[in-house]
Image (cartoon, rainbow over all chains, first blue to last red; front, side, top):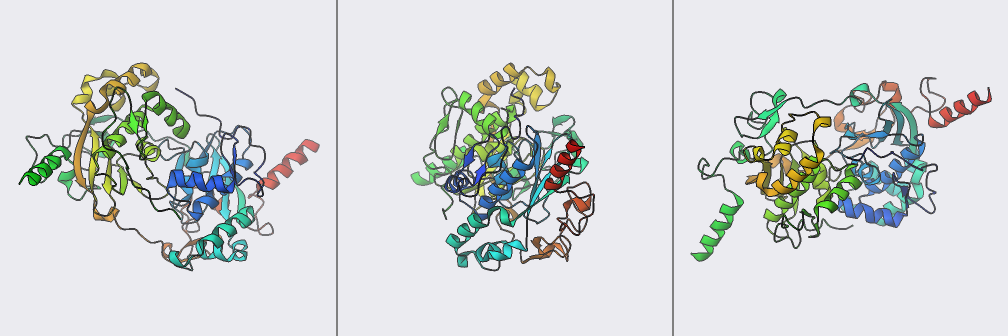
Length: 244
Length: 244
């Protein structure tokens, strides 16, 4: 099992706005064009907020002392968490990235033991100097009316000028790991679940992401109601209907 | 701006358990060893749940009709969301991946317009046949007592045998996009925030990830209290103390 890598080995200086746009946790710098590519590969498209976010994460890393083992908080659910996930090892699945949706476009990286770190936000006064960037941040134009080319130009030329940096100390609740506690088999759906959720799992309590609770139960073939279909059944149905 | 890519172009068959472990949305297959590497590169370490998760996501994709534009729900916050983010374009930042923490180790991929899709869970009966995998899922052993090598062997040999598949229809609330609504500048912290959160942003209302509310305010130098330090100040302090 590999130990968590150092958050920012070798990062000493923030990439120059002229040559590079962002820098990942290994210290590798990436141009603006490469950043657009990285965004496409991970996020599906080069969302403006993600491109600016890559710069924000790079700036935050540049402010942390070298070899800091850091975790991250994103203050928004939109795009910014992906900038953290692209450039650092903090992800939503390893819980080194947390989201606390304050609605502000900002993030913080902090020492995972002391909680001390740096927050990067957007300076709403400065942003007024870049019309397309302002229109994007304040959503003064519908998406289809936005001038994408102007927006990317604004992001690239504004760069750090619209970012503000502050030292923060993260709330201690972000530093403690909450254990799942004992695991048992849910008598409702027969899947493993944390006992602390109750006598049956949350889905069997009615809290389900599926349209009907029965859809989320994995009943055995003999017990299944006709409304619940498995993929194999669906394919069988398709074949039967084709034969008719 | 690039459109969302097809979820699973070219995926017709699930990778054979012997040769390949998982398959990404482009149709590229990856061996078990390559999967460990991919997990390390994104997640920091090859967490057992993530490795099994890569198989689960591949299986789910193999069950979706070709060219389906899909979104994802992970029923747990642990590891599995990263398996989705590694193999598909569904991420937490583009909101094509949602987390509904039911506590069960399961995920669903579904057609983003119809909501119909497939759920992959773990068969708690089958899992009993693999001792190390069972111990991991039910946490019957402390992490340091787990036999990692045996666990990875179990995951690889169990593969699809411990996975169960069912058709699901996602709840309509996952299909509608919730708009942020109008954005304004918060009179408290002077950052952009969604007006629907209140007259000031959530942080200025006291809901903050930082230890003290003032840490999250980006005050101008003249207005700052001495307790709030900027990175530049800290460096200045360091220099001063060295000089003393």
